[in-house]
Length: 364
Image (tube, rainbow, N blue to C red):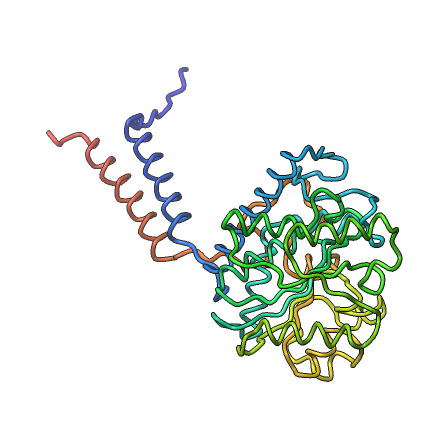
């Protein structure tokens, strides 16, 4: 006895191909224009991250042009922004993992989000203190301030901790000047100190101090003479006030762990990473820049302690490849447009139905 099978009518290959192409087109449209983030500063955050990426690429290009050898063992993203373990301009111990984590253009989005939450508006003055310890974070902050069109008043210190911008031939003050010359940012530091111990490289060699001073001089920055007393702090606060040129200082941003900015290790831990919106009372008094601004209740942003800050912002610890712009929890979850997705699905179903009807044989 022979088995009898029902053989369905085969679908047209052209129809199947057409439906496949139509479905893929719908997915592309929904992905491209039908999704949005939940953060209110999404456009600014993305622009800042894109600019930060350009800044980081420019620094890498310059580093390679100067003969810097990139070692994937220490710089897995091949960024060119991981320095040496030790050099004459190295100020202190530094965490390699933190330096690797900092090479992420999406930290510019973090800076934008914190500055906006602090109430910073276009034209406001933003006081900044950074060293060469985290050149990638410095570049990300610069990109954020450029996009937000604020007036940065920056005081840098030339020295860097381990794995930072501690190559004597290419230090952070060189990188900052490079970004300005390339037209990526329209500002740079108003002055610089040597950095390191007591902010005057007191714990470094005479050769190291000469190299730090030479870097500041070749970039045309005024050298802040420090003496390890209260007058040094007063001088910095006056530079910030003068640089603001009558504008309100809307926030103070610290990058890294310079002692004059955040104090000793124990003091800096009291500041905590991220944004302190109302620092008066939250940050204890002391002979630091952070404490002075806190006493005025100026919001404080502390880009430090990346082992805490990066996960908090949804950014990876020690990424294995160069992070892509727009990736990370800082942007918030994606939301897709339900009406647009429904429309795309309806078009595909309508096309399938039309194809089936056209293939139906006519009645005799």
